Length: 379
Image 1: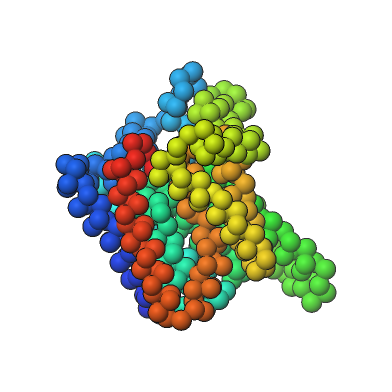
Image 2: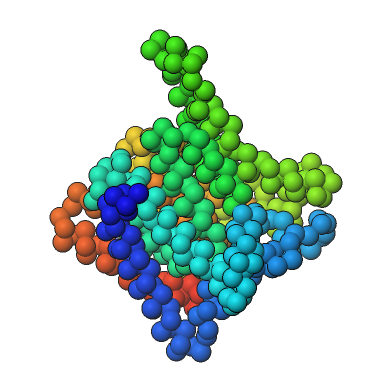
C-alpha cells in the first residue's frame, strides 16, 4: 500500500496542484463578484438536492411536476453524507459532502494513474491524471457532486478487471451503480469482460481442471457488477408501485432515450439559429471531442473493458434527450477517452508536455470560474 502510494505520488501531487490552482482562481473571482465560495462548492444546484436527500430521504410519490422528483438521484453519495453528518454533527451543512468529494477525487486520480501506468507506463499515468484534473468542467470534482465518487469507483473497478481481481471489480461496479445512472455502463464493461474471459478459459484445456476445483470468481464478478444499479431501479419501482417507476421519474426530468436526435437538434439550433454562450460552446466541443477520442481509442486497441465503458458512457450521454448543459460533466468519469492524448504527451519532449499541461491547467481554472460565476445556470 505505502509502496503503491509512493509510486503514484507524482500523479497525486500534480493533480492536487492543478485543482488547487482552480480553487484559488475561483476564490479570487468570487471575492471580486461578492459571492461565497463555500456556498458554491457545498450547497449549490445538485449539491443541495443531495443534502436534502441526506436530511429528509426520498419522496414516496411520482407527482407531476417537472424537474422536482428526487428519486432521479442515486443513493450512495447522500447515504455517505448522512453518515458523515451523523458522525461529525458539528460540521457546517455541506462540509461533510465536500470532504467526501475531496477524498474521492484523490482516490479517483490514483485509480486513473494506476490504469494509465499499467497500460502505458508511469509517465503516461501521471499525464492521464493531470489531464483528468484539467478538463474544462473539472472544478466539479471538488464540489458536492457525485462525479469524483463515481470516477473513483470506476477507475479502481476497471483496474481490478485489468489485473484479474473479479470480486473487487464486480463489487466496485455495484457501488458505482448506486452512485449514478451511468453505472450501468461500468456494470456492462465488467460483466461482458468477465463472461468473455470465462468463455476463453472454458475453450482452453489448461483451465478446465482448475475451473472444476476453484470457484468461478469471474462469474461472481459478472453477477455482482449490475446488482447496485438494478437494486436501486427496482427499489424505486416498488416505492412508486409500478415496474417502470425509475423511468417514469426520468421522464418527468425530460430525460428519455431518443438515439441522439435531441442532442443533434440542440447542436443545430445553437450554431444555426442562436449565438451560443461560451459554456454551451464548450459543452458541444466536449461532446464532439468525446466521439473523436473514442474512435482514436478504438484504433489504439484499448482493452475491452475500457472500450465498453467509455463507449456506452458516450452513447448514453449523447443518446438521451435530457437537459443539454450538464453533458460535459456527465462525461467526466470517461477518463479512458483521454488515453490517446496522455500517451502522445507522455512520448513528447518534456518541454512540450509541461507546456501543454500547464496551459490546460490554467484554462481549466479560468473556465471553472466562468462555469460557476459567469454562466447563469448549474454546471
